[in-house]
Length: 421
Image (cartoon, rainbow, N blue to C red; front, top):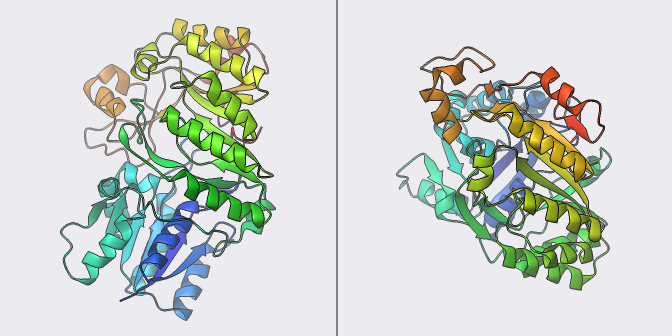
């Protein structure tokens, strides 16, 4: 029997605002299984708790889902911890005695800790397109074995073409400089030791289904897109096939994307240009151990910069530097490299947000000298849920090295994101 489901977007970040495509993707899947779905978008609401309370007073639901995109704002400067505000929303739902299920990338980072902190009933780790309907089936039958479901075991639904902009007000986002996102896959094969998405199972969408989703949005008048994959080029052949198919469609659009420095070849950049990609953001580490883990070097970075120049694609670099045991010479080598091989911009991050289930956390646990470089006092009972950062540099250290070169900016000092230059 179909259920009445409310999906809540509590993300109120507006620099720029981010359309909750994860909830839209869930809606397509849940409606396919006969459920009645409503999205309550709190992004532009001055009083989100009042809006939720009023909505629950006027509508009846069998279950409520809340998406946690981020636990906090992820950067050290002007950091904001979001969970206390989310807790108030959860408490509101609980007063109406409606079961609550959590999901989203932020929830997947530390699911047990977040479930306990927010006092919700259930959660889904990773993709929910297939996992959520399976959960509801077991829940209705009284056959749940666990209150946290691993969506990575279920992957994506290959049959879905997501018809979007039906239950979310896109014009509100557009008028506030938001960009329409889309996704080609979930998961990441990289092994970055600080990242919550590292080494997660990769599942790809069908290229024809992605193109159908994009074409529907273009027909509605939306022509500026941002790819929401963590890294577009997880599989080089898939990336080339997608760009080739998008280029052949000749849709009146432009798009921007995240990539990693490997794998790549010149054909990829040529097809990105032909498919109207105008900006690439690449995440780079100055730490050579992390570079080796992810199969790239300075040679690869130089080639990528040359290909972007050749095919008239702007390149933004997300640079992480100052990893535990990395030397200042390593940082200076990377900054000197970009001064000589100049992309459009280089955003420098030197505070590492620590998450529980990462190699970085293990390094911190095992080394008291690293614990002294944390942004707040360390305890053996630390669960890393509230923001805690590692940094071995001060802001002035980087500013002295940069020496006023406007190629570089320190991430978080100024508002904005790297996919909107």
